[in-house]
Image: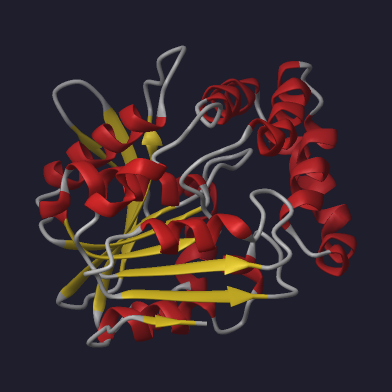
Length: 273
């Protein structure tokens, strides 16, 4: 059973867990979720077991002491501080969804920390039309509608057939959601309103893998392409688009982790698909 640890800085603390014993370092920044991924450490470690031999993997949560308002820029600053507090340097960084937004912020403003950057189902900006889905989740969380929130979240991120198969499990999981879970969810979800780093993407200096989904009902298929188009053309850029795996392709596509591993191990050159 994976042990969740806590890294402390001068101003905050952050939970994390690690696995693998490789010489290279991979830091994973999960997306927005109703409950912390720390509650599912064993499942995450198993899902990313392909990295065990060559990488030591750190999965970072958001900070424990959340302020009432907490921007993505602040999340990135704190995450970078936690990475440094762990004694890590020049990490490979994979961010999914909101985690990808944090990862891009780190790569833009603290490029010395990032060796390679992998981005999954994320966006460089959140138009108001896309924020409406998140806003609905926020309202459900504020109303304490745990079951409806879990189901709405699952229906949006998973393909229809996966959601249908998982519906009862999601409904059951909602029973363990606490008031603190809902409070944190609202704060983290509200950070997405007005997020826009499109004009700063060209500052990212490392090789980048961008993975999107044609059927992403949360951020849309264009989000991944816009990131790839906005990156510095001198970078090594790889864009890959799934179809049929939804926003949560990082969970549902069977070759997703292998694709990230291949990118991290490769001498990347610009390629598009």
